[in-house]
Image (cartoon, rainbow, N blue to C red; front, side, top):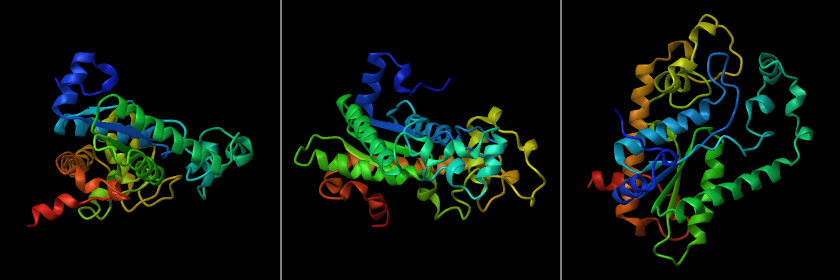
Length: 275
């Protein structure tokens, strides 16, 4: 049986043991969004959660509860902004007008600021629980920009405090796009393979039309019909390997990530492996 690494599922002594062995916390970020007729609408968050759990199991640390809510519902959302948003709404038996900005209580700018504050609050909460590195795992790709902004401000907030937690954020495909030409998509072969590896019961490729025919709310270089659980596991493992190098380098060389903007630096560990 695989070890439990989800923070909310552990007793205090179990948490302390894992935290003292590897003081790293992974916080999955996602949304609820159309991912084709063949995938669950929680796909973004479920992928981030699965990768966070994989990293904690392989490299130590703990995976925190996933965040499904709070992101912008009028920007960078398939239901609101996709060119085929009307077909997406039809597939959900909703009116496309449900996603108009006027339906939301806050403007796009206000939503972005609210989410930014929420991420800062989460990072502060993680820090208060005794972790040295806090990692935001973005499953919904647009959230990496919000996560980077929060990381930069959080790291600046503790400037001058040598004991402060280091924050970092990543999105899986950016870490491995030098290895895979199909890295990153929306409900295409990349994300669908992730879901087949993590939650196969949520994927139904039989709902897709023959390969080559138009798809609603799907895009990418790899067709979803070509997705497989084996490929999903391969690319999750590849991303986790890079994440663990990034995290390990931050734990061992925290000085390299202190100071203005340095918390966003990536790939410093590669310099050591090429010496």
